[in-house]
Length: 167
Length: 223
Image (tube, rainbow over all chains, first blue to last red; front, top):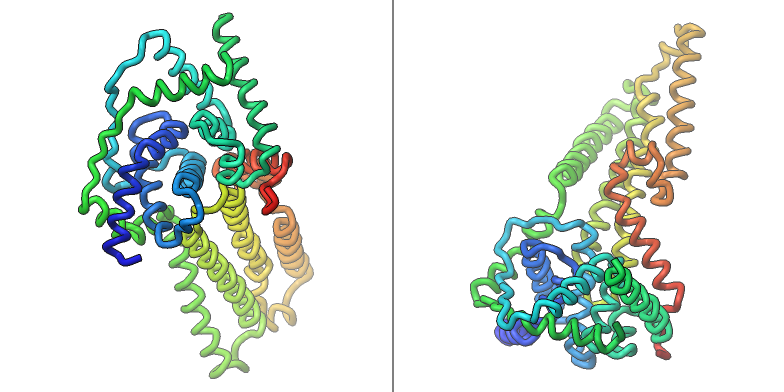
């Protein structure tokens, strides 16, 4: 791929899939500054990996692999602040939810934040409506293993909602 | 709350957020130019210093040792020469392993299935212990380089006992640490004392999580 084409493809991918990057960052980082750093880190890895992109793979599978891998490594380092330009992807609330729904959404995010680094990825992919086969491709575990793990995680989340309701 | 509710909640919650992305050519240029600087900035200054100091030490002392061997082999104490030789060899090995690990880490392909790549990253990080283990093997040589023939001819029994105790204990300590310095022992006080245990805690947690992920089955070509 010529450099000019590479730049163009990169911009198109980032533009089309900025929501994906942002959701991964939101799942792994609690505060806005860390999220911006993480998104920047993911963009760098996408740029570096772009020449090696295999068109036989769905673009989202490829993007999820890179984004989650970077997010987990970043998360493990426990949010390192870099001295370079931020990703400049700024979230805007355009259509606020009704209060009760917003509260439930906040709780869901809170409960997901309590999960370990791998379970976070699994549940995020599931909530993004990815099939078990897609999740297995992204994560590198068997489809049956995805099913078992997902069952446990969903149970955990449901219990957390139930406990919260009772309290 | 059932599965459909969870998915609905996630999607509605995320749909309310639009991402205002300011992405232009100049930001891409910044992104591509900072690869190398990012690599260096991600290293702690103390690690860069250690690497440079190690390189200088190996090159400097190595050069002096080669010169001494060539021009003054008969005049130099063999204890000094061989101790220094092994010390420099071990330092050189550690520096080479460290550079290989860093370059592998830098060139790693993030487009790998998550469990596989994370396992590779963790193993790479855990293998940095090998550098420390090799450096620790130098310990006994720091207790032998000052030996000389006059010491053996004129030395007293207490001196021999003291010297023997120091060398034997350093040798035992080096061998013991070489075999016991592994991430499974990261919670031990001596490990924390030597290697800042806090850095290893998230790694050990991750190893547990990854093992748990793999227990249910990894993806094969048949899947």
